[in-house]
Structure formats: structure tokens, C-alpha cells
Length: 117
Image (cartoon, rainbow, N blue to C red; front, side, top):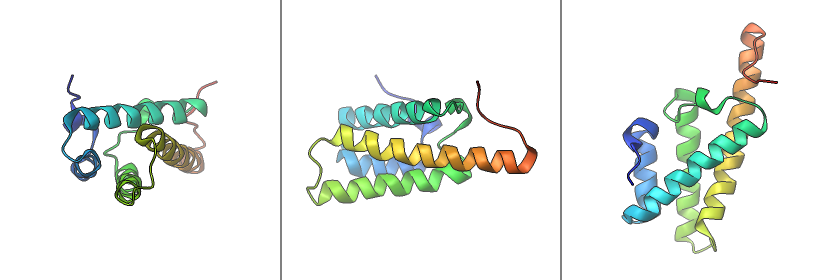
């Protein structure tokens, strides 16, 4: 099953995913799914609507790319035992930070929240 990754990930994120998976299509799909699962769980755990976070958004694209490149570096150094767990925990933390930042920005700008109760 191929993800419609052109609609989900930016070009630079796809490049990082290609580096991370070393050209292995199945591994690339698995990592993409892990990233999307981490995004959903991180944002939903704080009651932030994950559907409001497009990975290609200006304030999301670069931090996600940077996190992916940090993962690539760790993989190349041989420091990763379980790639999926590492990808999940790294991206989960990244999405929690991005979600908090967006929630604070939205509240300061209009007093509106992007959470649900």
C-alpha cells in the first residue's frame, strides 16, 4: 500500500525519508506511518486537533525536516537499536512542541483555542 505522500509530506521531508529508508520502499512506508501515528497521538493527547496540522505548513515543515535529519544522523552513526521506536518518540516529542507552540500562538492572536473538551 502506497501512501499519497506527495499530499502529506513536503519535498524536503520526502528526501529525508528516502535517506532514512536507504531506498527501501517498505521501510519508507513504515516510517511514514509511524510519523503520522506519532503526530496524531501527540496532538490528540493534548486535545489538539491533529487534522489542523499539515506537515507542509510553513511553521511545521522545517522542524519536521530537521527532526528527520537528526534521525538520519543517528542511524548513520549506528546509534539506533529500534528504528520505529526511535522515529515515534522523536516525532512524538516534535509534534508535542509544535502543537503547544501553535496553541499558544492562536490563543495570543485571537483568544481562540485549537483544542476540544
